[in-house]
Amino acid sequence: MNTDLPITLEGWLRNSGLSRLEARMLLQQVLDINHTYIIAHGQQPLSISEQASLSRLAQRRLAGEPLAYLLGWREFYSRRFQVSSAVLIPRPETEHLVEAALAHLPEQGILWDLGTGSGVIAVTVACERPDAQVWAADISAEALAVASSNATALQANVHFGQGSWYQAQPQPALHSVDVIVSNPPYIPAHDQHLQQGDLRFEPQRALTDNHNGLSALATIIAGAAAFLRPAGWLLLEHGFDQGEAVRDMLAQHGFSQIHTLPDLAGLDRVTLGQSNLH
Ligand code: GLN
Image (cartoon, rainbow, N blue to C red; front, side):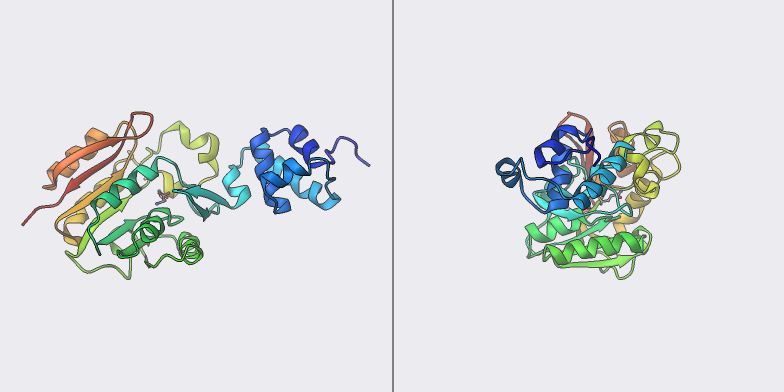
């Protein structure tokens, strides 16, 4: 027997090579147990196959693979969302975008989430506001499969359409949408962060426009007027240094009430504007 391998639950937490938090998350996942169980049964031995599964996962984690992909889920807005390497891992910053979307969505309003990925924005809005009509678009069939599985698991009623931004089908009617929301790929192609940390493992087309970081934002801003109802809102997540550029583009396209909301770090993160009153 290889005595290097941890053999009890507590031994795994101490000797996995991972942080104790991540070691525990993987342990709970593999054994399908909760934290309280671990506290009560720290001396329980791991079976050979449990040890094997756990060391495989630890190796992948130590090679940099994000914990969310190893677990297969990430919590967002207090709900558990399935994720795979076909979708961006939901970020806590995006919860601010959801808050803002909820605040601007009228009773029985219509919301369209462009580039839905795992579906976190659309599904969260549909769960929080069952009165709303929620649409979600993505170009990736794999992402839409993840998003629709999340909608099913969370009993959210979302209309999914496949295609690039406003070309997705099916789509809401012209001039009908109260809120268009998007967390598009906004990292510039040359940004070295794309080669670092979790980002190395995430889908590149969810992260970068392969250009200057503003091209997807520009496409979304340019196309919004055709779908928004008069005085509807466009809400965009963007990089901390893109607030001014996004505000300028919104102004050029006739939006009013343009303002930027900071994230918890105090950085520009979400910018919104209202379409013409007509
Ligand atoms: N809408 C998803 C999210 O906010 C995916 C965004 C993306 O892939 N750029 O997490």
